[in-house]
Length: 66
Image 1 (spheres, rainbow, N blue to C red):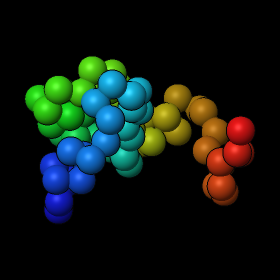
Image 2: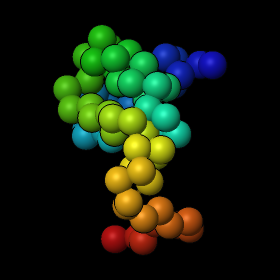
Image 3: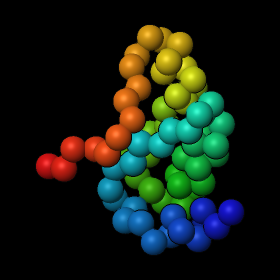
């Protein structure tokens, strides 16, 4: 509910990839971020549902630390 306030704490020049289950919430978030001056925001069109429909795999777990 406080996404707009939380996003203000992020660096505006970093790169962001947004996604959600269907793509609707992430699209709204991307629009808000662009309006707030974020320069490199990408929304995964269709979300995880579209990803699975395309036959791409999903994995659960923690990301690898670099």
